[in-house]
Image (cartoon, rainbow, N blue to C red; front, side):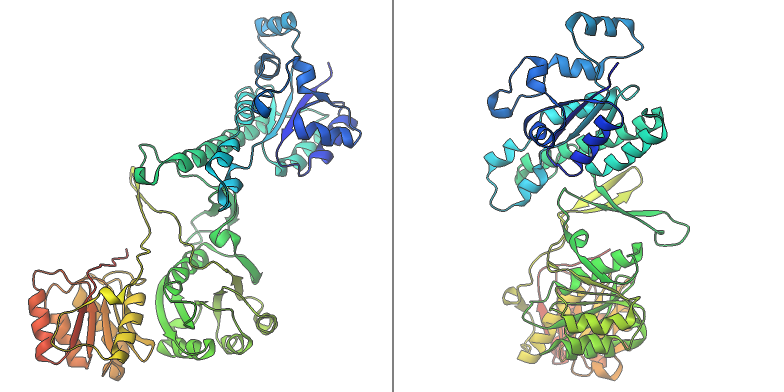
Length: 512
Protein backbone atom coordinates (compact mmCIF):
# COMPACT_ATOMS: atom_id res chain seq x y z
CA UNK A 1 0.00 0.00 0.00
CA UNK A 2 1.31 3.44 -0.94
CA UNK A 3 2.16 5.44 2.18
CA UNK A 4 0.31 8.71 2.50
CA UNK A 5 1.49 11.99 4.05
CA UNK A 6 -0.63 15.00 4.98
CA UNK A 7 1.29 18.29 4.71
CA UNK A 8 -0.32 21.53 5.89
CA UNK A 9 2.15 24.10 7.16
CA UNK A 10 2.17 27.80 7.95
CA UNK A 11 5.99 27.96 8.04
CA UNK A 12 7.18 26.73 4.63
CA UNK A 13 10.83 26.38 5.73
CA UNK A 14 12.25 23.06 4.48
CA UNK A 15 8.91 22.01 2.99
CA UNK A 16 10.09 21.29 -0.55
CA UNK A 17 13.16 19.31 0.51
CA UNK A 18 10.99 17.14 2.76
CA UNK A 19 8.28 16.63 0.15
CA UNK A 20 10.81 15.75 -2.56
CA UNK A 21 12.42 13.14 -0.33
CA UNK A 22 9.03 11.65 0.55
CA UNK A 23 7.97 11.33 -3.08
CA UNK A 24 11.23 10.54 -4.83
CA UNK A 25 12.96 8.34 -2.24
CA UNK A 26 10.15 6.72 -0.30
CA UNK A 27 7.19 6.69 -2.68
CA UNK A 28 4.79 8.74 -0.56
CA UNK A 29 1.52 10.15 -1.88
CA UNK A 30 0.96 13.72 -0.73
CA UNK A 31 -2.23 15.25 0.62
CA UNK A 32 -2.24 18.98 1.16
CA UNK A 33 -4.39 22.09 1.42
CA UNK A 34 -4.31 25.82 0.71
CA UNK A 35 -0.98 27.53 0.25
CA UNK A 36 1.01 24.39 1.01
CA UNK A 37 -0.57 22.55 -1.94
CA UNK A 38 0.13 25.50 -4.27
CA UNK A 39 3.83 25.49 -3.40
CA UNK A 40 4.10 21.74 -3.90
CA UNK A 41 2.35 21.91 -7.27
CA UNK A 42 4.51 24.83 -8.40
CA UNK A 43 7.57 22.67 -7.66
CA UNK A 44 6.20 19.94 -9.93
CA UNK A 45 5.36 17.52 -7.12
CA UNK A 46 2.21 15.40 -7.38
CA UNK A 47 -0.22 16.43 -4.70
CA UNK A 48 -3.87 15.74 -3.92
CA UNK A 49 -5.90 18.67 -2.59
CA UNK A 50 -7.59 17.82 0.72
CA UNK A 51 -10.87 19.21 -0.65
CA UNK A 52 -10.66 16.86 -3.66
CA UNK A 53 -9.87 13.89 -1.42
CA UNK A 54 -12.69 14.53 1.03
CA UNK A 55 -15.20 15.83 -1.49
CA UNK A 56 -15.81 18.78 0.82
CA UNK A 57 -14.61 22.26 -0.16
CA UNK A 58 -12.85 24.61 2.23
CA UNK A 59 -15.50 26.78 3.89
CA UNK A 60 -15.84 29.80 6.15
CA UNK A 61 -12.95 31.59 4.50
CA UNK A 62 -10.58 28.71 5.20
CA UNK A 63 -11.61 28.19 8.83
CA UNK A 64 -12.64 24.62 7.97
CA UNK A 65 -10.24 22.68 5.74
CA UNK A 66 -9.10 19.41 7.27
CA UNK A 67 -11.81 18.78 9.88
CA UNK A 68 -13.29 15.76 8.09
CA UNK A 69 -13.74 12.04 8.89
CA UNK A 70 -11.71 11.00 5.84
CA UNK A 71 -8.75 12.91 7.29
CA UNK A 72 -9.07 12.13 10.98
CA UNK A 73 -10.24 8.57 10.35
CA UNK A 74 -7.13 7.91 8.29
CA UNK A 75 -4.94 9.30 11.05
CA UNK A 76 -6.62 7.73 14.09
CA UNK A 77 -7.28 4.23 12.75
CA UNK A 78 -5.47 1.50 14.69
CA UNK A 79 -3.75 -0.83 12.26
CA UNK A 80 -4.04 -3.77 14.66
CA UNK A 81 -7.79 -3.40 15.27
CA UNK A 82 -9.77 -5.21 12.52
CA UNK A 83 -12.92 -3.16 13.13
CA UNK A 84 -11.03 0.10 12.57
CA UNK A 85 -9.74 -1.17 9.23
CA UNK A 86 -13.19 -2.42 8.31
CA UNK A 87 -14.66 0.99 9.04
CA UNK A 88 -12.10 2.63 6.77
CA UNK A 89 -12.76 0.15 3.96
CA UNK A 90 -16.52 0.67 4.24
CA UNK A 91 -16.17 4.46 4.02
CA UNK A 92 -13.43 4.52 1.43
CA UNK A 93 -10.85 6.10 3.74
CA UNK A 94 -7.12 5.60 3.22
CA UNK A 95 -4.59 5.30 6.01
CA UNK A 96 -2.43 8.38 6.65
CA UNK A 97 1.06 7.51 7.85
CA UNK A 98 2.66 10.93 8.28
CA UNK A 99 1.21 14.25 9.47
CA UNK A 100 3.32 17.38 8.95
CA UNK A 101 1.66 20.43 10.45
CA UNK A 102 2.84 23.65 12.01
CA UNK A 103 0.44 26.17 13.40
CA UNK A 104 -0.71 29.66 12.53
CA UNK A 105 1.81 32.19 13.94
CA UNK A 106 -0.35 33.41 16.81
CA UNK A 107 2.65 34.43 18.93
CA UNK A 108 4.26 36.47 16.17
CA UNK A 109 0.92 38.09 15.42
CA UNK A 110 0.20 39.31 18.95
CA UNK A 111 3.81 40.45 19.27
CA UNK A 112 3.11 43.16 16.69
CA UNK A 113 1.85 46.34 18.32
CA UNK A 114 -0.42 47.06 15.35
CA UNK A 115 -2.34 43.77 15.64
CA UNK A 116 -6.05 44.15 16.39
CA UNK A 117 -8.01 41.74 18.54
CA UNK A 118 -9.88 40.46 15.49
CA UNK A 119 -6.63 39.79 13.64
CA UNK A 120 -5.29 37.89 16.64
CA UNK A 121 -8.42 35.73 16.83
CA UNK A 122 -8.07 34.75 13.16
CA UNK A 123 -4.59 33.46 13.89
CA UNK A 124 -5.92 30.90 16.37
CA UNK A 125 -5.39 27.59 14.61
CA UNK A 126 -8.14 25.00 15.01
CA UNK A 127 -7.53 22.31 12.40
CA UNK A 128 -3.78 22.25 12.96
CA UNK A 129 -3.86 21.34 16.68
CA UNK A 130 -6.56 18.76 15.96
CA UNK A 131 -4.35 17.08 13.36
CA UNK A 132 -1.29 17.16 15.60
CA UNK A 133 -3.15 15.72 18.58
CA UNK A 134 -4.77 12.99 16.49
CA UNK A 135 -1.46 11.90 14.96
CA UNK A 136 0.33 12.12 18.32
CA UNK A 137 -2.35 10.01 20.00
CA UNK A 138 -1.94 7.33 17.34
CA UNK A 139 1.86 7.43 17.37
CA UNK A 140 1.90 3.65 17.57
CA UNK A 141 1.33 3.82 13.81
CA UNK A 142 1.62 7.47 12.69
CA UNK A 143 4.53 9.89 12.67
CA UNK A 144 3.84 13.56 13.46
CA UNK A 145 6.14 16.50 12.73
CA UNK A 146 5.25 19.92 14.14
CA UNK A 147 8.36 22.02 13.41
CA UNK A 148 10.62 22.34 10.38
CA UNK A 149 13.75 21.53 12.40
CA UNK A 150 12.45 17.96 12.72
CA UNK A 151 12.50 17.34 8.96
CA UNK A 152 16.21 16.50 8.51
CA UNK A 153 16.20 14.00 11.41
CA UNK A 154 13.03 12.40 10.08
CA UNK A 155 14.44 11.91 6.57
CA UNK A 156 17.71 10.61 8.00
CA UNK A 157 15.74 8.16 10.15
CA UNK A 158 13.82 6.89 7.12
CA UNK A 159 17.06 6.37 5.20
CA UNK A 160 18.56 4.45 8.09
CA UNK A 161 15.49 2.21 8.56
CA UNK A 162 14.46 1.27 5.03
CA UNK A 163 11.76 3.93 4.83
CA UNK A 164 10.21 3.07 8.21
CA UNK A 165 10.17 4.81 11.60
CA UNK A 166 10.74 3.18 14.96
CA UNK A 167 8.21 3.24 17.78
CA UNK A 168 10.69 5.22 19.90
CA UNK A 169 11.10 7.85 17.19
CA UNK A 170 7.34 8.24 16.74
CA UNK A 171 6.77 8.51 20.48
CA UNK A 172 9.41 11.25 20.78
CA UNK A 173 7.71 13.14 17.95
CA UNK A 174 4.32 12.68 19.64
CA UNK A 175 5.64 14.08 22.90
CA UNK A 176 6.96 17.13 21.06
CA UNK A 177 3.62 17.62 19.32
CA UNK A 178 1.64 17.54 22.57
CA UNK A 179 4.13 19.94 24.16
CA UNK A 180 3.78 22.22 21.14
CA UNK A 181 -0.02 22.32 21.21
CA UNK A 182 -0.02 22.79 24.98
CA UNK A 183 2.29 25.80 24.70
CA UNK A 184 0.20 27.18 21.83
CA UNK A 185 -3.04 26.88 23.81
CA UNK A 186 -1.48 28.49 26.87
CA UNK A 187 -0.29 31.43 24.77
CA UNK A 188 -3.85 31.96 23.55
CA UNK A 189 -5.31 31.58 27.05
CA UNK A 190 -2.85 34.14 28.40
CA UNK A 191 -3.76 36.57 25.61
CA UNK A 192 -7.48 36.18 26.28
CA UNK A 193 -7.18 36.48 30.06
CA UNK A 194 -8.09 40.04 31.13
CA UNK A 195 -5.37 41.97 32.92
CA UNK A 196 -7.72 42.29 35.90
CA UNK A 197 -7.72 38.49 36.19
CA UNK A 198 -3.96 38.30 36.59
CA UNK A 199 -3.97 35.10 38.61
CA UNK A 200 -5.82 32.36 36.71
CA UNK A 201 -6.87 29.17 38.46
CA UNK A 202 -4.37 27.21 36.35
CA UNK A 203 -0.94 28.64 35.64
CA UNK A 204 1.01 26.94 32.85
CA UNK A 205 4.72 27.65 32.81
CA UNK A 206 6.25 26.61 29.50
CA UNK A 207 9.10 27.40 27.20
CA UNK A 208 11.03 26.26 24.15
CA UNK A 209 14.58 24.99 24.53
CA UNK A 210 16.99 27.77 23.62
CA UNK A 211 20.07 25.67 24.34
CA UNK A 212 21.37 23.10 26.81
CA UNK A 213 23.91 24.56 29.22
CA UNK A 214 27.15 22.88 30.23
CA UNK A 215 25.97 22.73 33.84
CA UNK A 216 24.01 24.74 36.41
CA UNK A 217 25.35 26.81 39.28
CA UNK A 218 27.83 24.01 39.98
CA UNK A 219 29.37 21.34 37.71
CA UNK A 220 27.34 18.53 39.30
CA UNK A 221 24.03 20.27 38.41
CA UNK A 222 22.40 19.89 35.00
CA UNK A 223 20.82 22.92 33.36
CA UNK A 224 19.18 24.25 30.22
CA UNK A 225 18.00 27.63 28.92
CA UNK A 226 14.39 27.97 27.73
CA UNK A 227 12.73 30.71 25.71
CA UNK A 228 9.22 31.93 26.47
CA UNK A 229 6.91 32.79 23.59
CA UNK A 230 7.19 32.15 19.86
CA UNK A 231 9.20 35.30 19.17
CA UNK A 232 12.64 35.56 20.81
CA UNK A 233 12.74 38.42 23.31
CA UNK A 234 14.98 39.47 26.18
CA UNK A 235 18.27 37.60 26.41
CA UNK A 236 17.10 35.18 23.71
CA UNK A 237 17.09 38.13 21.30
CA UNK A 238 20.43 39.55 22.45
CA UNK A 239 23.34 39.22 20.02
CA UNK A 240 26.47 37.47 21.26
CA UNK A 241 29.25 39.24 19.35
CA UNK A 242 32.10 37.12 20.70
CA UNK A 243 33.17 34.81 23.46
CA UNK A 244 32.24 31.37 24.72
CA UNK A 245 28.69 30.10 25.12
CA UNK A 246 26.80 31.71 27.97
CA UNK A 247 26.70 29.69 31.17
CA UNK A 248 23.93 29.36 33.74
CA UNK A 249 25.72 31.72 36.11
CA UNK A 250 26.45 34.17 33.28
CA UNK A 251 22.75 34.43 32.47
CA UNK A 252 21.73 34.87 36.10
CA UNK A 253 24.33 37.61 36.57
CA UNK A 254 23.44 39.27 33.26
CA UNK A 255 19.81 39.51 34.32
CA UNK A 256 20.89 41.08 37.62
CA UNK A 257 22.99 43.58 35.66
CA UNK A 258 20.13 44.36 33.28
CA UNK A 259 17.76 44.81 36.20
CA UNK A 260 20.09 47.41 37.72
CA UNK A 261 21.39 49.39 34.75
CA UNK A 262 17.92 49.87 33.26
CA UNK A 263 16.97 51.87 36.36
CA UNK A 264 19.05 54.76 35.03
CA UNK A 265 17.94 57.02 32.17
CA UNK A 266 19.76 56.39 28.89
CA UNK A 267 20.70 60.07 28.79
CA UNK A 268 22.86 59.54 31.89
CA UNK A 269 25.95 57.42 31.09
CA UNK A 270 25.93 54.64 33.68
CA UNK A 271 28.04 51.56 34.32
CA UNK A 272 27.22 48.70 36.69
CA UNK A 273 29.67 45.95 37.61
CA UNK A 274 28.05 42.78 38.97
CA UNK A 275 29.49 39.76 40.79
CA UNK A 276 27.32 36.83 41.86
CA UNK A 277 24.17 38.92 41.16
CA UNK A 278 25.31 41.70 43.51
CA UNK A 279 26.55 45.11 42.33
CA UNK A 280 30.11 45.84 43.43
CA UNK A 281 30.44 49.20 41.68
CA UNK A 282 27.98 51.56 40.01
CA UNK A 283 28.72 55.02 38.67
CA UNK A 284 27.20 57.79 36.58
CA UNK A 285 29.27 60.40 34.74
CA UNK A 286 29.28 62.74 31.77
CA UNK A 287 30.72 60.00 29.55
CA UNK A 288 30.84 56.20 29.57
CA UNK A 289 34.60 55.90 30.04
CA UNK A 290 34.59 58.01 33.20
CA UNK A 291 31.58 56.11 34.52
CA UNK A 292 33.39 52.79 33.96
CA UNK A 293 36.61 53.99 35.59
CA UNK A 294 34.74 55.21 38.66
CA UNK A 295 32.58 52.07 38.92
CA UNK A 296 35.73 49.93 38.76
CA UNK A 297 37.50 52.08 41.35
CA UNK A 298 34.58 51.55 43.75
CA UNK A 299 35.62 47.92 44.27
CA UNK A 300 38.38 46.74 41.91
CA UNK A 301 38.93 43.49 43.81
CA UNK A 302 35.34 42.28 43.43
CA UNK A 303 35.16 43.45 39.81
CA UNK A 304 37.67 40.79 38.72
CA UNK A 305 35.74 38.14 36.77
CA UNK A 306 32.58 40.23 36.91
CA UNK A 307 29.81 41.29 34.56
CA UNK A 308 29.76 44.85 33.20
CA UNK A 309 26.54 46.46 31.98
CA UNK A 310 26.36 49.90 30.38
CA UNK A 311 23.26 51.82 29.38
CA UNK A 312 24.70 53.45 26.25
CA UNK A 313 26.39 52.01 23.14
CA UNK A 314 29.92 50.90 23.96
CA UNK A 315 32.64 53.15 22.49
CA UNK A 316 36.27 52.43 21.72
CA UNK A 317 37.77 54.30 24.66
CA UNK A 318 35.62 52.44 27.20
CA UNK A 319 36.28 49.12 25.49
CA UNK A 320 40.02 49.80 25.65
CA UNK A 321 39.79 50.40 29.40
CA UNK A 322 37.85 47.17 29.85
CA UNK A 323 40.59 45.08 28.24
CA UNK A 324 42.84 45.74 31.24
CA UNK A 325 40.62 43.56 33.49
CA UNK A 326 39.46 39.95 33.30
CA UNK A 327 35.69 40.08 32.76
CA UNK A 328 33.17 37.32 32.15
CA UNK A 329 30.63 39.35 30.18
CA UNK A 330 29.99 42.83 28.82
CA UNK A 331 26.49 43.89 27.80
CA UNK A 332 25.47 47.13 26.12
CA UNK A 333 22.54 48.38 24.02
CA UNK A 334 25.00 48.80 21.13
CA UNK A 335 28.69 48.40 20.30
CA UNK A 336 30.72 50.49 17.87
CA UNK A 337 32.91 48.74 15.32
CA UNK A 338 35.96 50.26 17.00
CA UNK A 339 34.89 48.78 20.34
CA UNK A 340 34.32 45.37 18.71
CA UNK A 341 37.76 45.40 17.14
CA UNK A 342 39.41 46.31 20.45
CA UNK A 343 37.55 43.65 22.44
CA UNK A 344 38.62 40.97 19.97
CA UNK A 345 41.96 41.09 21.75
CA UNK A 346 40.08 39.53 24.67
CA UNK A 347 38.39 36.88 22.58
CA UNK A 348 37.13 34.85 25.55
CA UNK A 349 35.10 37.67 27.09
CA UNK A 350 31.44 37.38 26.15
CA UNK A 351 30.19 40.59 24.53
CA UNK A 352 26.46 40.99 24.09
CA UNK A 353 24.38 43.64 22.37
CA UNK A 354 20.93 43.95 23.97
CA UNK A 355 19.12 47.03 22.61
CA UNK A 356 16.08 46.62 24.86
CA UNK A 357 17.69 46.41 28.28
CA UNK A 358 14.55 47.80 29.89
CA UNK A 359 12.35 44.85 28.89
CA UNK A 360 11.62 42.99 32.13
CA UNK A 361 10.01 39.55 32.39
CA UNK A 362 6.24 39.63 32.72
CA UNK A 363 6.38 37.60 35.92
CA UNK A 364 8.92 36.27 38.39
CA UNK A 365 8.59 32.63 39.40
CA UNK A 366 10.14 30.92 42.43
CA UNK A 367 9.93 27.17 42.92
CA UNK A 368 9.11 25.89 46.39
CA UNK A 369 8.46 22.37 47.61
CA UNK A 370 5.11 21.28 46.22
CA UNK A 371 4.55 24.29 43.98
CA UNK A 372 5.79 27.68 42.93
CA UNK A 373 5.25 31.37 43.66
CA UNK A 374 4.54 34.02 41.04
CA UNK A 375 4.84 37.77 41.40
CA UNK A 376 5.01 40.81 39.16
CA UNK A 377 8.58 42.14 38.80
CA UNK A 378 9.69 45.15 40.86
CA UNK A 379 9.62 47.70 38.07
CA UNK A 380 8.21 50.56 40.12
CA UNK A 381 9.45 53.85 38.69
CA UNK A 382 11.58 56.00 40.98
CA UNK A 383 9.70 59.24 41.67
CA UNK A 384 11.89 61.48 43.83
CA UNK A 385 9.34 64.29 43.63
CA UNK A 386 7.09 62.17 45.88
CA UNK A 387 9.77 61.60 48.53
CA UNK A 388 9.09 63.16 51.91
CA UNK A 389 11.71 65.14 53.83
CA UNK A 390 11.14 64.13 57.45
CA UNK A 391 14.03 66.02 59.08
CA UNK A 392 14.65 69.65 59.78
CA UNK A 393 17.38 69.76 57.17
CA UNK A 394 16.65 69.33 53.47
CA UNK A 395 19.24 67.54 51.32
CA UNK A 396 21.45 69.72 49.16
CA UNK A 397 21.10 69.33 45.36
CA UNK A 398 24.32 67.29 45.34
CA UNK A 399 23.05 65.05 48.11
CA UNK A 400 19.72 64.71 46.32
CA UNK A 401 21.45 63.43 43.17
CA UNK A 402 23.51 60.92 45.16
CA UNK A 403 20.45 59.79 47.12
CA UNK A 404 18.71 59.07 43.82
CA UNK A 405 21.66 56.99 42.60
CA UNK A 406 21.91 55.10 45.89
CA UNK A 407 18.18 54.38 45.90
CA UNK A 408 18.28 52.99 42.37
CA UNK A 409 21.21 50.75 43.28
CA UNK A 410 19.88 49.50 46.62
CA UNK A 411 16.84 48.14 44.79
CA UNK A 412 19.16 45.63 43.08
CA UNK A 413 21.04 44.53 46.21
CA UNK A 414 19.98 41.43 48.17
CA UNK A 415 18.20 42.30 51.41
CA UNK A 416 18.98 43.53 53.96
CA UNK A 417 20.62 46.07 51.69
CA UNK A 418 22.53 49.31 52.26
CA UNK A 419 24.30 51.50 49.69
CA UNK A 420 26.67 54.35 50.42
CA UNK A 421 27.32 56.78 47.54
CA UNK A 422 28.99 60.10 46.84
CA UNK A 423 29.66 62.21 43.75
CA UNK A 424 27.82 59.84 41.43
CA UNK A 425 29.47 56.57 42.47
CA UNK A 426 28.84 53.84 45.02
CA UNK A 427 31.46 53.68 47.75
CA UNK A 428 30.12 50.85 49.87
CA UNK A 429 27.49 48.14 49.39
CA UNK A 430 26.28 45.90 52.19
CA UNK A 431 23.84 43.22 51.09
CA UNK A 432 22.32 39.89 52.06
CA UNK A 433 22.63 40.49 55.79
CA UNK A 434 20.32 39.09 58.45
CA UNK A 435 20.12 42.43 60.25
CA UNK A 436 20.05 45.95 58.90
CA UNK A 437 22.65 47.48 61.19
CA UNK A 438 25.05 44.73 60.08
CA UNK A 439 24.47 45.73 56.43
CA UNK A 440 25.13 49.35 57.41
CA UNK A 441 28.41 48.32 59.04
CA UNK A 442 29.55 46.46 55.92
CA UNK A 443 28.74 49.33 53.58
CA UNK A 444 30.42 51.91 55.82
CA UNK A 445 33.51 49.74 56.28
CA UNK A 446 33.87 49.42 52.52
CA UNK A 447 33.38 53.16 52.03
CA UNK A 448 36.01 53.93 54.67
CA UNK A 449 37.01 57.58 54.90
CA UNK A 450 34.95 58.24 51.78
CA UNK A 451 31.79 57.99 53.87
CA UNK A 452 32.44 61.51 55.14
CA UNK A 453 29.85 63.68 53.40
CA UNK A 454 28.34 60.73 51.52
CA UNK A 455 24.71 59.56 51.47
CA UNK A 456 23.13 56.24 52.43
CA UNK A 457 20.15 54.29 51.07
CA UNK A 458 18.31 51.43 52.76
CA UNK A 459 15.93 49.05 50.98
CA UNK A 460 13.79 48.72 54.11
CA UNK A 461 12.95 50.86 57.11
CA UNK A 462 15.20 51.15 60.17
CA UNK A 463 13.63 49.20 63.05
CA UNK A 464 15.84 51.11 65.50
CA UNK A 465 17.93 54.27 65.49
CA UNK A 466 21.20 52.28 65.65
CA UNK A 467 21.70 52.37 61.87
CA UNK A 468 21.29 56.14 61.79
CA UNK A 469 23.74 56.55 64.66
CA UNK A 470 26.32 54.36 62.90
CA UNK A 471 25.86 56.33 59.66
CA UNK A 472 26.25 59.65 61.47
CA UNK A 473 29.40 58.47 63.24
CA UNK A 474 30.93 57.66 59.84
CA UNK A 475 30.10 61.11 58.48
CA UNK A 476 27.01 60.30 56.36
CA UNK A 477 25.12 63.50 55.59
CA UNK A 478 21.79 62.26 54.20
CA UNK A 479 19.71 59.09 54.21
CA UNK A 480 16.91 57.77 52.03
CA UNK A 481 14.73 54.90 53.26
CA UNK A 482 11.12 53.71 52.90
CA UNK A 483 10.00 54.64 56.42
CA UNK A 484 7.15 52.84 58.13
CA UNK A 485 8.80 51.60 61.34
CA UNK A 486 7.01 51.99 64.65
CA UNK A 487 10.23 53.68 65.79
CA UNK A 488 10.59 56.08 62.85
CA UNK A 489 10.46 58.92 65.34
CA UNK A 490 13.63 57.72 67.04
CA UNK A 491 15.51 57.56 63.72
CA UNK A 492 14.28 61.02 62.74
CA UNK A 493 15.29 62.45 66.13
CA UNK A 494 18.76 60.91 65.83
CA UNK A 495 19.18 62.42 62.37
CA UNK A 496 17.99 65.86 63.50
CA UNK A 497 20.31 65.87 66.50
CA UNK A 498 23.26 65.23 64.20
CA UNK A 499 22.28 67.64 61.43
CA UNK A 500 21.48 64.91 58.92
CA UNK A 501 18.82 65.00 56.22
CA UNK A 502 16.43 62.06 55.88
CA UNK A 503 13.89 61.26 53.21
CA UNK A 504 11.08 58.68 53.19
CA UNK A 505 10.15 57.10 49.85
CA UNK A 506 7.17 55.19 51.24
CA UNK A 507 8.19 52.31 48.97
CA UNK A 508 10.12 49.23 50.06
CA UNK A 509 12.45 47.27 47.78
CA UNK A 510 13.16 43.93 49.42
CA UNK A 511 15.05 41.58 47.09
CA UNK A 512 15.54 37.94 48.06
